[in-house]
Length: 82
Image (cartoon, rainbow, N blue to C red):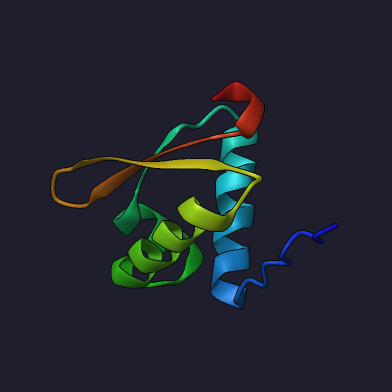
């Protein structure tokens, strides 16, 4: 029997998960990278690279790249709400 692979997140990734989960619990769905960056003290580029990684690995959230106009927009939902 294989044990599930444990994913270790960096401090930036944990802050991003907490921010997105809190927003999703309040009903917020769409986020722009530049706004996330200014609210949690990261650069938009760092948000983009970390959120792409989380989209592939984080089972707590469903993260989809939604659109791009002046900054990437992400659609984030909780797994049961997807």
